[in-house]
Amino acid sequence: MSKRIDFLSDLVDKGCNLIIDVGSDHAQFAINVLSKRGAKHVINIEKNNGPLTSGITNLSNSELIDKTTNVLGDGFSNFKCDKLVDLVNVSGLGGKLICEIITNNNLAIKKYLLCPNNNEVAIREWAKLNNYHIEIETAVEENDIIYHVFLIDTHAPFDNYDEYEIEFGARQFFSENKLLRKKLEASLIHIKDKGLDKLNPQLHKYAERIMVYLNENK
Ligand SMILES: C[S@@+](CC[C@H](N)C(=O)[O-])C[C@H]1O[C@@H](n2cnc3c(N)ncnc32)[C@H](O)[C@@H]1O
Image 1 (tube, rainbow, N blue to C red):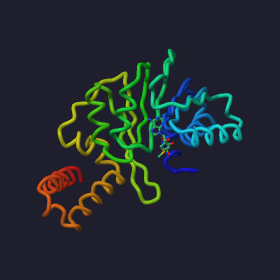
Image 2: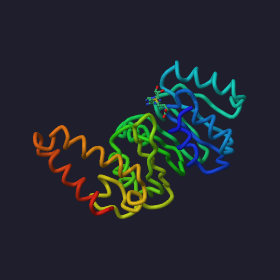
Image 3: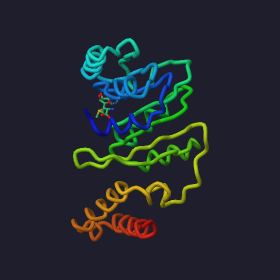
Image 4: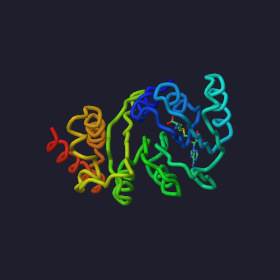
């Protein structure tokens, strides 16, 4: 069981009628939200046959298969659904790929739960572009890796982020979250320890911006 997926599941409202998990892999997210969050139905969309089959086996063993639809597909391409979707989860992929996947849909979606492996800026820029509200930005640590987690509400507008907040996250979330600070401090230490800021002017400026942001949000 993944601590990261447990953490994501705990952010899901109880009793959702319909959740979609894109890149569902072994279907752990579906199993969690059906069994612990009282979700009524989950659609798993998976690009590869191996993980899709593994997910179906896990759902059958958990006696939850009847509450799911399991689709072999590339994101939302060729996927249709005319019901209101309470939440779409996409986790464990790069931020840019996540944005590509969620941009290409014609569905009515209330919330997105996104956990990128990298490029969190892409997620904030996507929310800004679409004028969607970042309800929560937080983080979870698994196997010594800190992952950003975003809960995005499409029914409320994007807050007024400044450039630092687009790059590093809204101050209201950052200042009260030790893991978000730890992750940003670790990036700075990595750049400084390897002397990358001395080799690369862009990284020098990036390191300076990190220091400003860290100092401002103690
Ligand atoms: C690294 S795993 C992450 C699985 C799980 N979401 C998690 O957070 O642990 C990525 C999964 O997404 C699937 N995947 C990658 N791109 C996809 C796409 N465009 N559409 C559907 N599934 C995709 C892969 O086959 C793989 O099973």
